[in-house]
Length: 416
Image (cartoon, rainbow, N blue to C red; front, side, top):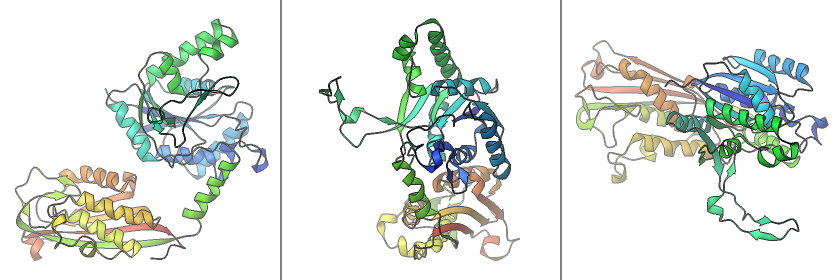
């Protein structure tokens, strides 16, 4: 069945634990890099290729003003996908229920995210959606706690020390099959209407949506979370915003890298380009590694951005360890070097020149794979293929060449 994915972004909380600073503003409305905190999560979620729309849940008490703020953000920094805005409720699960009712009928799967986690990554959200695509009903990210956890009684005495390996601190976004999440919230609402408030709070009041599904005996899969996906909860947590802004955004300078590589035909390596193996060709490559000319050019371009030399210095063909090694592995090691320099990839432009084989049947697969390898959205990667009209060694079908340009941002204080 085709997945039709929407996201519910919760920005309806009062943020009481972080409200004592920043002129008592609720944390989701605090300005960070010129935008309210909740809009950063909205922009990240909107970059998911499979996301079809977003429901933004705002405080009921301040709904008119909050809605105007959200619409202004969407006008100046548009999500480029359908946006629905709805008021929330007193409890978190009231706000989720409001978001669920705003979803279109065709929606089959839903991500629920707290706007107090502005550091969400597309990579984490995609992993959750992949698990839903494989048939899971509920998927949540979690991290093993760094501290030993103890259970205590009403007098503060320890009653149990659960093994840390079996514990997880749960994050958002959380992913669900829409029908399962809707049914769990419906049951909780029915209990609220038919039982006392004390009974409801004891059995159905929860702090996340996964807990509701657990009460309905729905299996919940926990996948590895992201340590960077931190939550702004207390006044002290607000320092994270300044820390990240200082370290990665202000000031920054652009950097540009260019890469070029060629490989001769006639060897014994299968034809691989951009990490994709061409099954429809008998062409073989001469190479020490796997001969992926496109990834080799990309590696050189990344190294150019950070002043890291070239692929021959980093991965010499005289080293037996690199014999027939996957170029994706070499690219991953190169990315680690860019991360050490705190470089952010803004755009990648790739060109392949070859008379044969035909690149166009594999173009989309190559684009998707390179975006995945670089951990960036596919919209930031461009791929062009051309021939050289019978000229030169490529025109004579003796080999293939590739060129890559990378535009990045790097902190100004980070000297190459």
